[in-house]
Image (cartoon, rainbow over all chains, first blue to last red; front, side):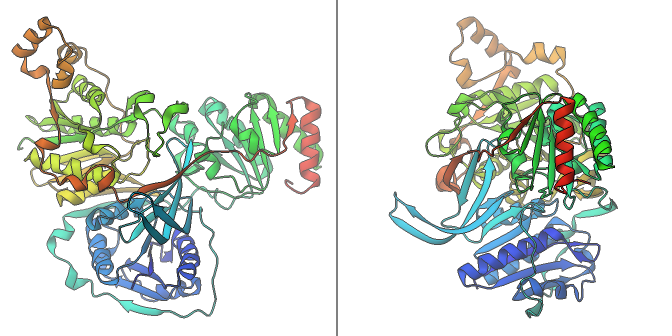
Length: 339
Length: 291
């Protein structure tokens, strides 16, 4: 009872990275709260997958195995989790901020009338004192996220309602094995007895999933462009530099919204979080949502015509100038000096 | 096929790209009055899909529902200019400070009051919060299925609606019975522009509150042209429990707001001159950052 639950997603017979990252964070929180970490694993033909989870410190894995659970559908997954939560009364529930998690978590929050915070960049345990009611709350989940166009960072709490629900984007939390020999318990849910026809009014007719074409998350060097790059055409300069340096190309949300780059390259709070050894920010102003996704870069070079761009404050090197002038020179002098 | 009743949930949002100093109130909620207000971008995509559905199924009607302060009536007018048939502004001080749960409750209770509906559209998320929660939460409260991240209406018939949806790593085509709630992704077509005739027809449409400031000449016209009236509903027009509304009905509380402070690094200032770039690349190669 009152444990931390993580909803785990399955991708190509593997547990999704974001779920393992949440388990890693969940274990830290569970240790602080002296409670157990439990995982939920729903899908079709998933026997044995639970063994990928225990080493992250998972005490209990709840599995539901049924043909109708894959591909993901909102209603059957919601129903199983609702049943489980009603019985187990978790204090915290964590979901990946993925197409699945962002579809599922709000449905559960609504049905349970509890609070949910989307796209958290940090989760901590803390206390709260409410002056109005003179009530002290302990061991609350601090759900921390940039808000309101990135101009502020908000700490959100749910003092009264349980579970405290949060979604977190892939790559935001670190993934770390807790103990290779850790052993948890498997609990199988008899999902068939929960379902009725009304859970299957939505049907998947066709599905085309692409393997990840872009591997920005693990790239050592990233050349990222913002709105200041100016056009899709100018983004080619970034690709040229990336090719020479063996880097991946990333983009800010503004650049993606403007159509300069694809969505899967978006770095930031509502995109991917990266930790490269070198981040070259081209024409990126550096709103906090963007910085939330790249602030752990070991080194940052900012190229911007505006010497007051916020990103310059976290940059190791600031080149004040135009990318169309700077990038070709970087390529030229890299080639010259690397020989 | 049978005509459809279509609802579009739209939100007027502060343009978060242009935020000034007065944007936040002391209690951590947004001071919307201090900001430019726009039609939430993905709600415009939702409006477009709704209009396409209306075009496909003859005789269908489209109602825009928005919750917000009085000036959110502008969202309804924008909808009318593009082909919506009517709109409801849900406005009440009691809604102030609502989080997504309290918002979805108020919207769902309003939709229930509107009685028959077949398809509810909403943008995937609003740019002031980016939570993407209100759509699914309204669907839950109406006890209907949801299709999130729609980008195209593939087909519709009396039995079902078929939607192509955009996922993180692919696309999916799904069918659903009706009624259903559909949230729309920015990859859906852009909303059509205002129609000149509709603009002429509806530019003087107003809510009862807006009408109060108008001249008698205007009132004469208003009386004779019922389409100029934009419905304005308060908590008294829907069945709600007060304690589930606004700040009090919101389980999420803002504990702390921090203004973003940069931990400024000692950065090296460079120019795009050959000498600077040459030195930089040498340095990066020497310390094994690149190469």
